[in-house]
Image (tube, rainbow, N blue to C red; front, side, top):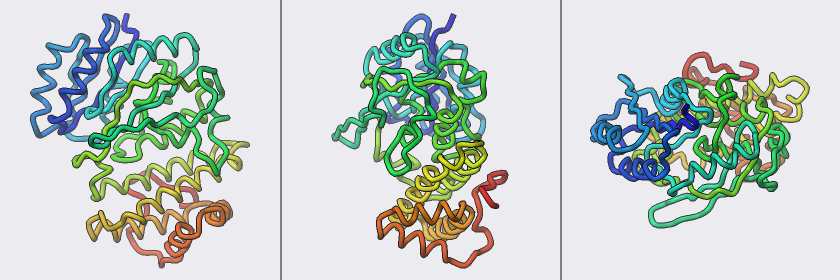
Length: 336
């Protein structure tokens, strides 16, 4: 019986994949499987993964014939997973030896749907610890209670799928899959859905995940059209939160405020985008602001600092333009 399935997507990470695979080997157990998803890499990554199947206990290689992005690659792994529990790792990150068994012990002892854990952010030679924004550690909590307050960083603002472990019943309930085709911000609708619909979770102080930042091939460093998928992702957050029954009015201010903060963040670094993408970003962000519930948006803008609020108010006043809607089809936002 497989106790734990670890889903690890790879795309053109030949420089970093050996570290990732060594860390998996240092976490292997007879009842663990490692689902290595090659998302149609065009560098030396496929050959590295072929060797890994022979060298890493429990490694299984899954290949995409077309590049589908991180969300789709993770879904491929989820669909193939046989474990009672699931975890994620990205193909350019790594784990401390024994981290997965330690985290598995924690979730089994707590008996909850999922656990969230801290991680180490690595930028070049710099290291910094990032904590789950949940004060009560090692205690089973109700995920819906960890969404608010709107004006503070909460558990839904810590979206990293690899910073935790998840019971298979979440797969069976349709809560663990990602929105297919999202190439950035894929974990935002995912973390919101987990917190709205799962029954229990806990935060644990198990520090053993090392997350690389500042990689030139990472989408967070590339200013092309794929970055604009955050619009589609947050439209989904708003739409699903607005349909959340009696709690919609409580949760929408948090969702809108977060969406606004992300738009302001991208506008603040708009110079890194190619000019046509920058124009698209402005038009799509303006359209997104107009789609939001306007009373909730006004409150969010009033609560933000003056500089970001001014940027967003100017955006909202931009004339509507053709092509200023959501990325992709089927991603209608509230009021669209």
